[in-house]
Image 1 (tube, helix red, strand yellow):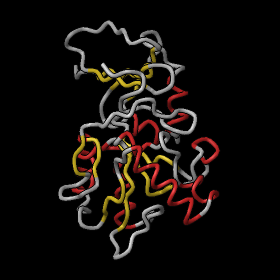
Image 2 (spheres, rainbow, N blue to C red):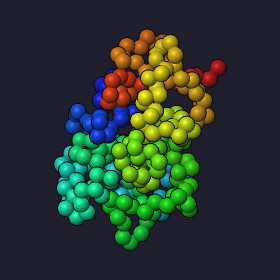
Image 3 (tube, rainbow, N blue to C red):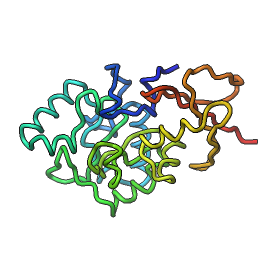
Length: 240
C-alpha cells in the first residue's frame, strides 16, 4: 500500500512539496533514450508514440530529475534568465513533478531544443499525441488559463502520468490535478464514489482519509495517496 505521499495521483506543487526523496523504479522514456521515467509511465508513453508513428518525431527532453538536478536547474535558470522567468517555468526544488518520475517534457524533433521551453505545437504529430494522451493516462499538466491554480505558466510541452480513467475525466471536465484532487473529496469512499465509463471501461473512484478499504478478494483496484490529506481509490468494474 502506498503512503499519502506516493502514487500516480500525488499532487506536487509549491503548496504541497514532496516530503520523501524516493527514487522510483525507472526506465528509458522511450527505447534508447537517456531520459528516464517511472517504468509504467515510460511504457505508456512508448505505446502512445508508437500508436501514432511518432517515435522518431517526438522526443523526450526531461523526465525524472533528482533533487540535486532540480536545484541545479533552478539556480542556473535564475542566473541566466532572472527570477521572474524562473518562477514561471521552473518549480522550486522539492516542488517539481519531475522528481516523482511521472512527468515528461516533450519536443518536436529539431537540431536545437530549448530545455526549459521546448517547442511542442498543437498541430501535426504533436496534436495527434494530445488527442490520444488520455488513452495512455497522460494529461497536459499546466494548461493556459489555469496559471492562478497551478502556480506555473502554461507549458504545452509538459505532460503528467496519472493513469486511466483519471486522465480522461480531467480532460473531459477541463480540470487541473489541483482541481481534480479537490473534486474527489466530494466523493467519499464507500458511500459516495464517482462512477465513470471514461476511457471505454467502468470504474468507481472515491476519496478516503485513511486507507482501510473492505474489498472482495476478486475486486481489481488501485490506490494512490494525494500528497495532501488522504487516498484516492480506483475500483475497476468487471464486465458482467
